[in-house]
Image (cartoon, rainbow, N blue to C red):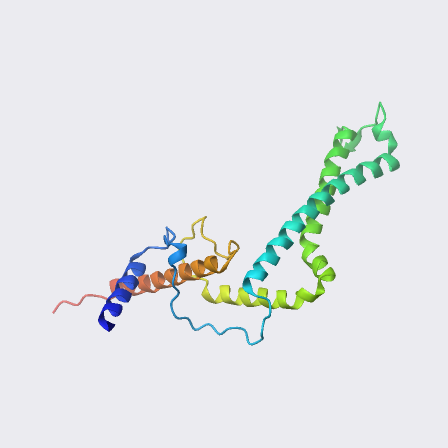
Length: 216
């Protein structure tokens, strides 16, 4: 029994080590990922927010932020047009005076249109980036646990991330932004472990090639 387990584990290890992850990411089945032993120390503070609840809350905050940003863009666009019509009504008349910019005459209606788009986009981006803070002002009871879980996840990703890969594929989730559940997290960690193994193996192979051969 012990020999069969040892042979199975040895074959799995040799398979993962022979997989090149520098130019091509490892092909793994998400439902069959098993992590190897790691030396990561978990958070010293108890976190009452489960990981699944944290992911759901993070996705809802991102979704609500984008929806709020879209609404803010529309409000900012309309508000800018109204304010321009109130402050500079001559630009919206039948014969508007041209706007001089670098000795060039510009159509004032076109300038107002582009300015309204930029103003609305600036307002939308500001709301999207500030929405998490605004959300936790209203839902302050989840703020502490959410920040703890977010900090703990970042520490875990920084601990397992392979920073010595020679090439990074465009599909490679280097920062773990595509992690949506525990299966995705295990898959990401196992991928990084394989990259570290391949990196160490390449270092050993390059060291063997650099050893001079002495002829007797």
